[in-house]
Image (cartoon, rainbow, N blue to C red; front, side, top):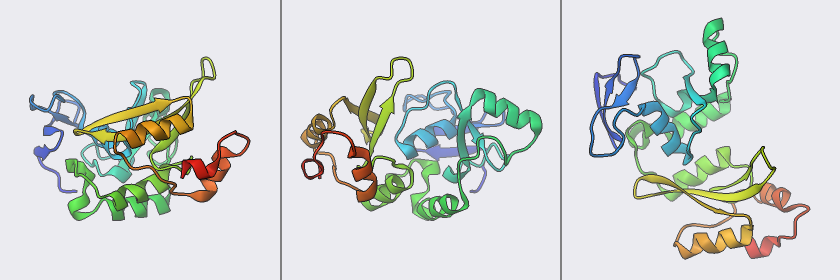
Length: 206
């Protein structure tokens, strides 16, 4: 990644702020003041980070916002990591294989640094990397407070990360298809494991 004082991205014009990070300085995109590395991570993984989750730059370079270099961790983990001065320890979640795949998917015209829109095949590969349910863009979220669980389909709409939720996986499929979005299984073994012990019929969810 080439480093520059000013970057033109889909999220807006980014400049280096007083903390040494790229932050959005333009107004029209609605991202003014937001850290570029958080926007890149959320856009790439189609998720919304909680405010107590920090993004660590794995190689120690605050300006290197290549997607493989952005590691989510809790604020306390991040503090411990920097206090120890060990930038390869706590919170590391990217394996060598993942880094290679992310670098391959993220090179050239596909560079997530600038908010590129990817092809369906590209999103399939990314989903296989991080998905745990076996269903494209579908995640299972369990809230710790009350153990309440929902199924969530995370996608982008008009350049923003959107979530479709339901407590019922079949209902979620209906909502997704009604919006004209893609629904399919990306990993049969994971899908079967996800449905094991439930009343869902795999054939109904294909």
